[in-house]
Length: 434
Image 1: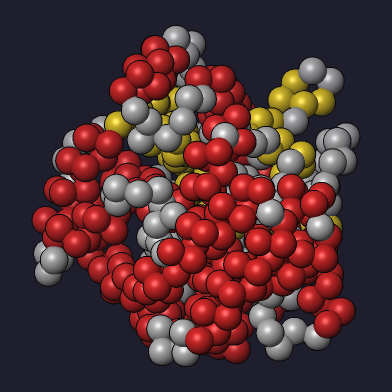
Image 2: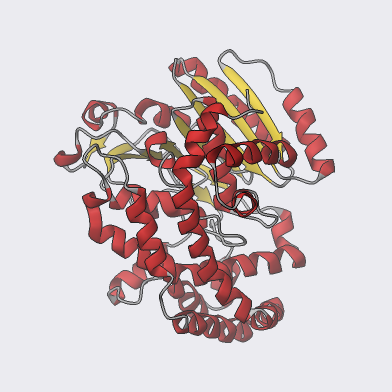
């Protein structure tokens, strides 16, 4: 029986989401005969954690579904054991990369990857706590349907299961490495207020994430499409494509990866940086690995906490870090695109050492480009005024630290890639997860 990991990382109250994802797990076990390990990685504070434990206890038993609800103490114990068994030279530093004290979108998913390895899972399927499922005829529409139908199977064998195939015939014998959809509803990055206040400022700010050498027409299209997902169209029928999936068409709240991808390369462990968990989507695309793009889009919404003054400021810091990280990531993506199929060895496996080399190469970029990004952001936010001007004051006071962190994040990512194979091997004898 195939064993898979459906994971929900969270640091906020989401009892309803836990129940909904558990229903998706039961669907996967029932319709595909899989053993679904529902993995809830919980970094919430004590009162919220207690509520989540009650929500887990209230889940109805489902054949083929095993629930793992791990707080940070349990996650830490697992990681300490794995890191020790891996022989990592700096175990405390490695633990900090895997379980940092600050928010890290990549690190929480990396923990899911390692735990999935320890559980013997063939794939990892990620959902987010601030999302819901669409429905059709009163029933939820689960992305797991497409993920379990295609992941890990030879692309040529999947061609008959999808609506259409646009895959390069040269890739037909490769297994499907990624299956994903997007989202509908609110923008994935909370920049809608900027767009409403001043469309010109919005174009300037979002344009900071687009590579400088892109033709102007591409820049305009990317700015227009960024963070908007699949718009607002409601699900009416399945539509799926076997293809090299564009990173612009999928979202990390609606993704499934075969272990041949995450078992070789982790996600960047950058802290307080939105978008840092999208790296593997680019890697799958640039290496020419087959994927399936579907339209079982998840409904995205923004929590009330993000609307508060405190939440707003925290989010602006994460957004600024994202804009600073793009200088490095765009350089890596350009090198991966240039390498293409050379990112794979003669067995079709991702060459992790090559990826680590591109990441290290990016750290030699001139920091002046990022300093200019901060200047543009400062001018833009001050033009918007109000709490954006307050955020500009905070960003200005932390500018040197932010610039240093953006580079250090990439150095630490390269370090983690180097350590990843020993870490994944060490999970086979790890303790604490059953």
